[in-house]
Image (cartoon, rainbow, N blue to C red; front, top):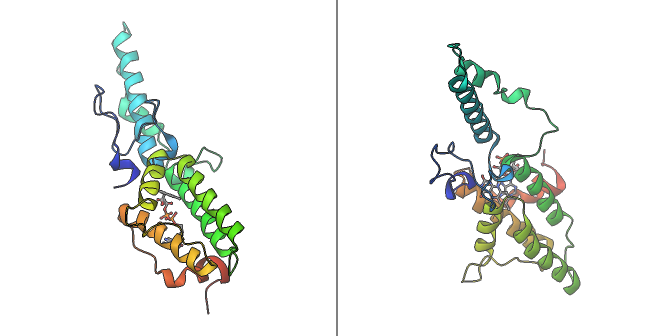
Length: 194
Ligand code: FAD
């Protein structure tokens, strides 16, 4: 399940929220848990609602072209400014870049202190990641009762592979293609072989 579908929001509201919109713990839409597409659908819905309320409260008989209004309020992806708050996807891409880069620069053989530092980082990361539904699932995956998904921190190779598997777990959940973990170092450390 994606963040968009695992914990959908708005079941109890009068107008159901657009598909994929995830609520934060305070009950408000969570931008960092929601894709830009779903966020736009939400904005569109709000625009329509506003337009309709203006229209019904107005004493004139003027017709408000709500569909046109909504379309005008919905920029195409190429028009999305780059300095907007991140959605779940942009946040995810940036975070995977950080996480895989941490693996790529991890010591070939990690001493106890390094292992403890990284273990601590992952523990707090999995609690503090700004998409809370993503964080909950990531924590649950790491805490699998068999212990098989615990971070492997002994060496760069182990850790990089573990990170790749963690990422593949999310890829599977979102219905994306799995990445071949034999290639993680080429992707994130050495660059592709010619
Ligand atoms: P990304 O998945 O962001 O990948 C970026 C690049 O990494 C790819 O282009 C590829 O070159 C490389 N890559 C892909 N897979 C691997 C791998 N296994 N190992 C190494 N490199 C790889 N989104 C949700 O909608 N719901 C969630 O529950 C959710 N949980 C997340 C949990 C975490 C911890 C993180 C960091 C992100 C999560 N995301 C979630 C975001 C999601 O994983 C993607 O980042 C987002 O959908 C954008 O995907 P993308 O296709 O652009 O590439």
